[in-house]
Length: 116
Image (cartoon, rainbow, N blue to C red; front, side, top):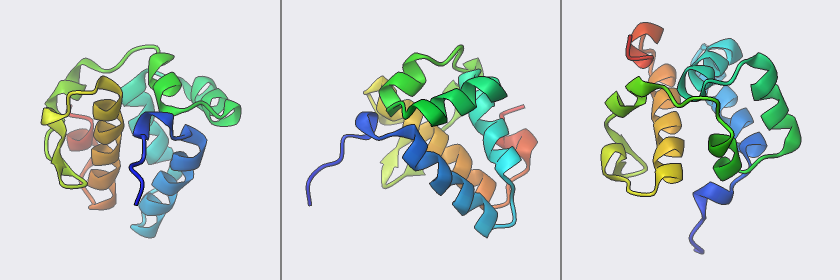
């Protein structure tokens, strides 16, 4: 199988998968949006613009108003790799977002997911 470049993946293709994963576990699109906005600093309008423009992950995170300072507290394994050991900054941010959505789908409380 060819190796997938995560930074070139379209956010608009990944976003619906996050929502589907959350909804399968009785969570909501609003919770997914809250997590993404917390991590990236986007407001509702900015997040919607990123979805509509078809930004890749590199541009999505490059344009992010402010990556939350507590994102450094996100630790754990995603796809068999420890998030805190990922060196590529874009890939690390994508995997942090994956980890937060995983926590949501597992039923974790929003306060804990958002490292409050």
